[in-house]
Amino acid sequence: MTSKTLVTFALLGMSSVVNGFWRMECRGNTGVARIDPIIDFGKISGHAHTVQGSSGFGMSATYDDLVNGDCTSCAVKQDKSAYWTPSMYFLDSDTGEYSPVPQVGGMLAYYLLRGDNVTAFPPGFQMVAGSNYRRDYTVGDPYSPDPPQSNWAALKQTGQSDLEQRAIGFNCLNYKAPAEASLFRHYMPNKTFTDANCPDGLRLELMFPSCWNGELDSDDHKTHVAYPDLVGNGDCPSTHTQRLVTLFFETIWDTNAAQFQGKSGSFVMSNGDRTGYGYHGDFITGWDPAFLQEAIDTCINPSGEISDCGLFTSNGPLLSDAEQAECKFEMPLVLAAENAVAKVLNQLPGGVQIQDGPQSATPPGGSADPATTSISDVASSAAPVTTTSISTTSSTSTPITTSSAIQSGGAFIENPTSSSAVTPSTPDFGAEEVSSTTTSFSSTSTSILPTTTSAPQVTSEPGVSYEVVSTQTITSAGGLVEEIVWMQPVVYVTEDTVTTVTIPGPAPQKFKKARDHVVQHRHNHGRRGH
Image 1 (tube, rainbow, N blue to C red):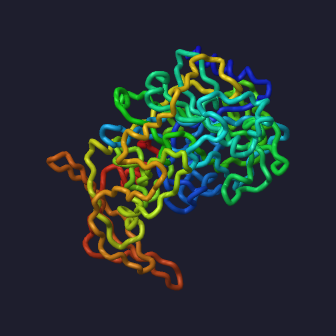
Image 2 (cartoon, one colour):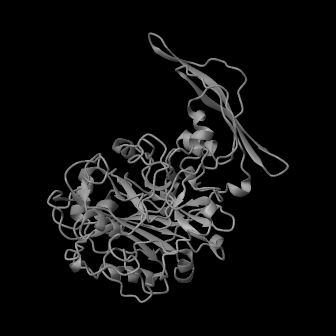
Image 3 (tube, rainbow, N blue to C red):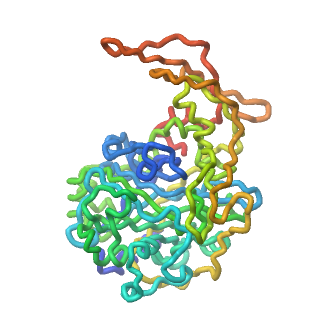
């Protein structure tokens, strides 16, 4: 453990441009679901995300929602921001089934204080880094190291698209060997490579733009910010002269977990990306700007440890790993029956299709959404929907592992110093392995949906909703577990004053569905269960 810490500090000490920084530890995730309040505000997102930060996160989350959240999965309780990235899955080429890859230690969100007059994020500020649909690398050979940064301008590689592609990293972790440099590899290596070279998993890295034009957001959620001409350092464009904190996300995925050893297959992000070029991340600030500005001005210890920042500790205490892990957001009812971290999945959440490029991926078109097809009536109808039950052998949640001995990086070195930073000679994303579940660049395939029983006619009468009365669990002789939710109608009547009247309805109706869905999410908030 000591040697790993020393390696990290050595990386930090090699740069003369880092005046100060801190690593925000977000050891727990608040949930894994198809939610993205920046790109898909108020509706189900196209793919699953692993989320850290405020419990106020949700489909329509705003700054106020985050700030008013009951808890945070980050160590500094004043940080009610939301941080999220695509989840990772393993596709077994023999079975065609997907399994979630465990995330190790949550997320480290680096707050790097680079440039002059660094400004705190204002209320309402949000941004996206990376491009969800990118499936190609256009800044030279992705299997060769980047040229020296001093040559980028002469090579005409300082456009925002160029810099965005170099802001992504896939770090092969081997704690017994010298560490690779951050942002050294801009593609996701295949399983053959990770099995041979990365016994401690993959660390996914993402640098956010830090140059700002003063707007809280933009139509594409990206152009109100820009990268300086060296990605994390350098000069800002003349259109974006203000300097924000430089955010840098690190998440470690256990690609060498026991359940993947000896199996043939490929790792894929939840957006159907096996190349890594479409990796991206989102951020909505949840800081009080005055508090964050004080942290920017005073938390400049070169250790980067939040415990070395007096502002954080004096307004603490810092939250423990266990406290961070307990914080969860409330799962929207429309997504409650979709378990994005089930032990085995027949498809990626949302029926996302794998697209390997090199053409840009395309959004889903025409295929039904499994969540809205099978459970959308739960939130708005006068009668429940019956869905196919799921065996307990395929619905167990994957545990999230935390460790105090996690090797962090830093994006502080320009070139690697280790001969262990090996790259495969061919891309080999496994495109030929499971042809029946993938498509090269088309999303026209119809999603495979679970069998459902048609729901009774939906009422359009306003003011009617259903409340849970009780639940019942039944285990059949074959080991199939069904959970029944008994619900009753509630009618809201408006007169001179607003009163709520409960109208006795017919006998409560049954709503069968898989265990670990609606009831778990509605009653187990604050418990580690994802």
